[in-house]
Image 1 (cartoon, helix red, strand yellow):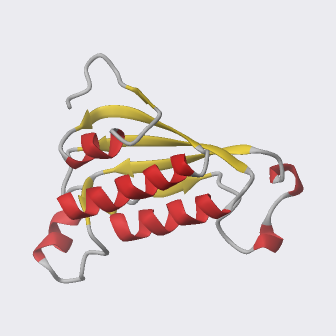
Image 2 (cartoon, one colour):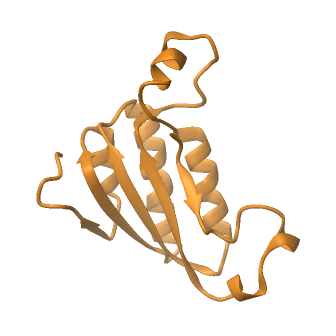
Length: 138
């Protein structure tokens, strides 16, 4: 698993944008899995565990959030979180970028899935609004 952007026009070369996407939009970012700082090195124990569980590369997610910051067409960001947490440092770096998005006037909404614990809960604390299911474990 990764932190992914879904239907976000700011990722990729500008010439690849579709004209219809040149209107204000909402970016959707997915945080699904254990939060780690940077990519998991091949051959490591974490890499073998990655086959069994999803991992969120915080460094990549931060880069994605910075791309969103630079795109004036993005008015809001929905962060879909389904994570047991993970690295405190990695979670803090993600939270700081969400705070910066808010400072720039972009609305940040966190949508919690089945689990939003530890660092994932901390990330959610930076949002303008948090939406959770009745059974979400926090």
